[in-house]
Image 1 (cartoon, helix red, strand yellow):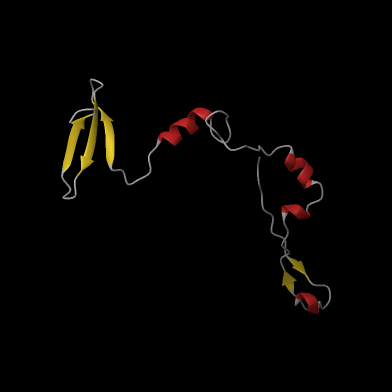
Image 2 (tube, rainbow, N blue to C red):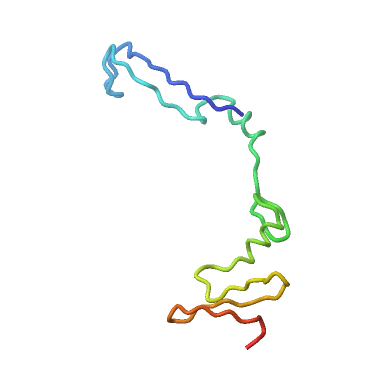
Length: 108
């Protein structure tokens, strides 16, 4: 859908003190989509409305993506699990001095 803007300059035909306009003064009227008769019926049928996504139902994102998003941990992380090329899982963490350590998951 193409959206365009048209700026129209008008000239006051008389003095309009309520609008702070004097005869001959130029002004630019402002309007909104609500002011266009019939626009709401045209737009309403074209606007896609989404429900919130859940792990069981699609919404603005797919339910599969929502499941992945829910698995993410909030930062800062206390540890991080990484998978090696052979598929082993390691837990990487940092101590109070900034020293990194990596241990096999389930190992000591």
